[in-house]
Every structure is written in C-alpha cells, then in structure tokens.
Image (cartoon, rainbow over all chains, first blue to last red; front, top):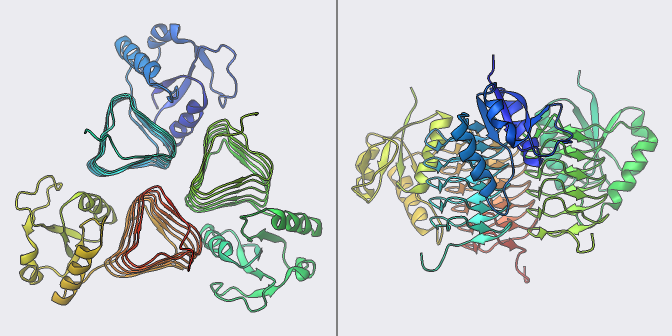
Length: 197
Length: 197
Length: 197
C-alpha cells in the first residue's frame, strides 16, 4: 500500500502538485491543510484542518509536503519547513514522471520537481525547493535551499542560485553567475550576475 | 480501421500538424484542402481541392481539422470553423503523444495540442485553438475559443486568455491576469495585464 | 557490444553530453581528450590524452564526438571537426531519447540533440551542431553547419540559421528570417532578421 501524504497549502501550486503526485503514484494524498476553512475545488481531496492541527495530524500521517507557492519571499515556506521537521514529518523528494533528473544530479528533502522540468548532470538542488513546470537546471548548477525556479525558468551551466532565491517565469540565468541570498529575479529577465562578484 | 481526416490549409502549421497526427496514429490523413492548386511538399498527402470543395468532400470524409496558422488575426480560422461545423464535419481534439494534458484539464473540439506542450490541472481550453509546440498552459488558466498560444508561450496560473487572442512565441503571461478579446501579445514579451482590470 | 566513442573536450558541455550518451546506450564512452592533464569530475571516465594524441587514439577508437562548448565563436569546433574527419574518425549523430526529432527532419554527422530538444517536421540541421537542452527547431527551419542553438532557444518555422551561428539561451528567432554566417544572437533576445534581407 502506498504511504499517505498530507499537503500543506491549498492554492494553485497545490493543484499542480496534486497532478504530479497522482501521476507518480507513489503516495496516497490523504488531504489538504489550509487556513481557509471553506476551501474548494481540490479534486475531491478533503480539508484536514489548518496549521494548528499539524501536530495532531502527525499521529496519523508520516509524510508531508509544503504546497504553498512562493513569489515575493520564501519566509512562510521556510518557517513551515522548520516547523514540520521539528514535529517529525518526513518530507519526501517528489519528482514528476514527466520530468527528467540526471542520475548525476542530487536533490534534497521537501523539494518538488514539476512536470516537464529538467535537471542536468552534476546539478545539486537543496531542500524545500520548487523546480516548477518546464524549468531547466543545467549541468553543474547549485540551487540552495528554499528556492523557487518558476515556470520555464532557465538556469544555465554552473550558475549558483543561493538560498531563498526566486527565479521568475521564463527568466534566464547566465552560466557561472551567482545570485544573492533571497534574491528576486524578475519574470522574463536575463540575469548576468553582479559586477562585484 | 482509423477514420479519415482532412486538413484544411497546407502551410507550415499543417506540416507540424501532420507530424502530430501521424505520431498519435488515431486518424488516417486523407489529404489537404488549400486554395493553392500547385501546393508541394506535403509529405506525400494529396491535395483534395480548395475551400469550395468542402461540402462535396463531406460526403466522403467525416472529420476535419483547420491547419491554417494564426498570427495577425483569427478571423479566417473562425469563419472556416463556423463553415465546416455548419456543413456537418466533426472536429476532433488532437493531442500529441509528446504533449501532456492533465486529467483535471478540459479541452474543446477543433483544438490541437502540439508536441511538447503542457496543459496543467484545472485549465480549460476552448474550441479551435492552437496550443503550439512547447507551449505551457498552467493550472487554472482559461483559454477562450480561437486562440493561438505560439511556440514556447507560457501562460501562468489562473490567467484568462480571452477569445481570439494570439500569444506570441516565448511570451510570458503573468499569473491571474486577463487579456482582451482578440488581443495580440508580442513574441518574447511579458504581459502583466491591463491597469484598469 | 556497443562501439567505443571518445569525447573531445572535458568541460561543462561534455558533462551534459555524457548524460545523453549514457541514456541512449548506443555507445560506450572510452574516455575524454582534453588539453588539461589534471581534469577532474568526469563521472569516472578516464582522460585519454590531449589533441596531439588524436591520431594515435584513432588506431584504437573509431568514433569521436566534439564536446567542447561554443559561445563566442565556432572556430575551435570547426577546426577540430576538419581535423578528426581527416584522421578518419566517424562522427555519429547523437539524439537524446528525451528529445524528439520528426521523421520528416534531417540531421547531419557530428551533431548532438540534447535532452528535451525538439526538431519538427521538414527541418534540416547541418553538421557539427549543438541543439542544446530544451531548444526548439520548428518546421522547415534550416540550421547550417557548426551552429549552436543554446538552452531553450526557439527557432520558429522556416527560419534560416546560417553556418556558424550562435543562438543564445532562450532567444527567439522569428519565422522565415535569416541570420548571417557566424552570427551571434544574444541570450533572451528576439531576432527579427535584417532590414535589407
């Protein structure tokens, strides 16, 4: 039998994540945790409670994934990550069967690789990241913890995306450049690094 | 035996469409309808006549797909759509086996989803659309009838692309914004919606 | 038994190429040729020597692929291509099993099509090219010899990319335009062709 997993955050990113988890068929989605008690349209999955119920839910469920999106800042996702780790949840690595991850790449706990994303050889991706639909992480890239590489974002070879960075939809990161921690790279932009680096 | 289908319009988009239809192997391409009587290089498929022959051809063929491209305006594709519907053709939904369409998404008649395109959970795509090669329609997006999302175009979560809109190649649509009807969004641009919406 | 192949150039593009060659499982990688005698992290493949050893290595190995990247200019890759052809190496066409190449497209010797790339119907790609990760070559495009279409680059229908051209990461080439020989098209840009063409 597949282990149960609970999803924390019931917005749009959750719906995309549900699609990935259904397709890989490794976990049974037990339900959603969200602050909104009248949450709708979650493809039939029940609302299990809100963040205050996470300790109690741990008695029943072993696995959790944070399915809150991340645009302005990763702070909510970071706090939740520390919180649910401290309670004792296991955070799996979720990789869409419509994605490709090189066997020469490494990914850490709590990170989801969405449909059509591609992580190439030698890349290292940290914890609690979103590698969103159709994003590309090229050879030898380092992506720190708590980053979101948005839809269609391209991180070229050897680039270093530091902790908490947001790379906007369809943004392009030049090869071998480095972002700042908690950096914000705009959708559709070309990021060439910082002059003093 | 596979049902026959005729393709209306013998230009470049037709050649890409032929590749998709051959790969999915659900229809036999009977031939092409085009105004140019000396059409060449259609991978061996015969020219069956021009638009004036569509009623006569209906006696022999049940299925049709409009394979004319759409850049400046959808008007020709729209008129043809109404015309062949009134004659009685069935317009199938064609989805490349190299595309991914979530089981939580909906698509309507006469729409083609080309190779490498991706339609995510909760998305709704109307009639007579082209979701072109490598385009991305994210969760909860609405694409109205007669739209063309061009090669590599990214429509982010919850956006509303209204009837007749053209989204240019590699353009990015911000999440939860709305286009105007018959809108034209330039190739490579970032569309953030309209101030008054 | 799979034939042996040697890879010439041990940088980042080599690592991506190794991943492709391992996945398609048609060649056994015998090792790497590079000017740097202290080359590291090549996933366990041995350093066989430098460019001066290519004639001697030909006695043992029949197949070779140039795995040097190409950004500023293709001149090094061009010279190497002529050199190893004159020695007698066979240069295979390498197509990732995570790529899609239409059966109506043509590709020539020494060209590699990386993961997630897509070459559509009627396209013709020359010798010694890199069609990099997630690049798109649309219907009826011509790509001359010694070109590099970088990660996520989109070459739209009927465009003519002439010999030695570099198309930067996520650049978009408008349909039916023509580049100059040895042209350089910037990452993230929209190329609309030249006014006098």
